[in-house]
Amino acid sequence: MNLSVRIFKIARAAEKASGVLALVSSKEKNRALVLMAKALLDQSAYIIRENGKDLAAAQKENYSPALVDRLTLDEKRIKGMADSLLATAKLKDPIGQVLQTIRRPNGLLIKKIRVPLGVVGIIYESRPNVTSDCAALCLKSGNAAILKGGREAVHSNKAIFKALKSILGKTKIPVDALQLIESIDRQAVHELLKLENIIDVIVPRGGEELIRFVAANTRIPVVKHYKGVCHVYVSRKADLAMAHQITMNAKTQKPGVCNAMETLLVDQAVAAKFLPSVIADLRGAGCEIRGDQAVRNIIKDGVKKATREDWSTEYLDLILSVRVVNGLGQAVEHINTYGSHHSDAIVTKDKKEAQQFLHRVDSACVYANASTRFTDGFEFGFGAEVGISTDKLHARGPMALEGLTTYKYEITGHGQIRK
Image 1 (cartoon, rainbow, N blue to C red):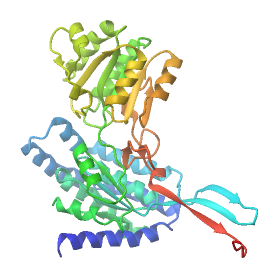
Image 2: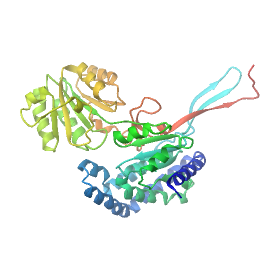
Image 3: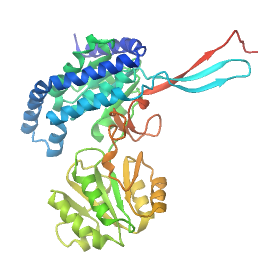
């Protein structure tokens, strides 16, 4: 059977299963998620062993430390994956929720009801936890999932998928509602993207190149964020100790993810006081600094000159652009010009200034006095996320259960006809 036929059959099976899954009760879906979490823990040794094959390949390919970190699984991370499944099981099921009830003068009763999207295709790169997170969210929201991971995590994804799918036969979830495309042939993505009559939405998770490729090569609706160029702005009214802590967390806690800070903006009134200590600590954590001339005037050595390209670059690594700005207005202008509308933060003690920042910055997630690293479905209390959207239509920010639904109108009458 050739690749095109195999993927078509996978998609058709998912489509058929989606109709059955849409009718499965919340109780049964939650039971399945609990069993899936247990399966991950029970098979953690097997999953880690298979992950070791991917890590060995990554070493041969000389992948960056940030990419290797995204790829790595251990007992703690597998427990985190299981916890995410359990958290998703505890969330309120959105399916069947009555969003609006309208009774017309002619007696028609119109109800707006939340329903699943149907079949969700998820194309992702080096983070194997996406396999379990997205499977859980899709199943809980009544959607069939077709998962297509990258070659760098092929063994890990297969092992996680095997653990998850092994328990579906013990539940009322249709087994075909969860599908994995195992082929590492790039043509597999092309074949998946052709199926606009079967797949209802595609969610690409990965670098900008992948997301742009998917958006350019399909007629299926795509939920996307091209990159995460996130900012922290340290106001002249900031608590500088807090600003220091937030800066370090936003950049160094996990630099290879989309919600990590890529540009630090510092008000000129506090730059000379704030920058020396924070840049020293950033360097101590292995971070390369690229600054504008004002930064280089304060830090006399070791700061590379930032270019215009740096301001719009998602490094996903221990590299940070730093700029001195003149007040809130210039900070907001910089963010709205060079940012990617993902996650941006201000550190300030002034509540009015904080509100101005929150209202004026055009991003999916805006923060006052907190790290951008919180842009995450689990941290938002959503259980997990299938992705973080910087689109403005349908879903924005961490896309979880509600983002995986749409609605329909159910109309009940007693013989009315239109005159």
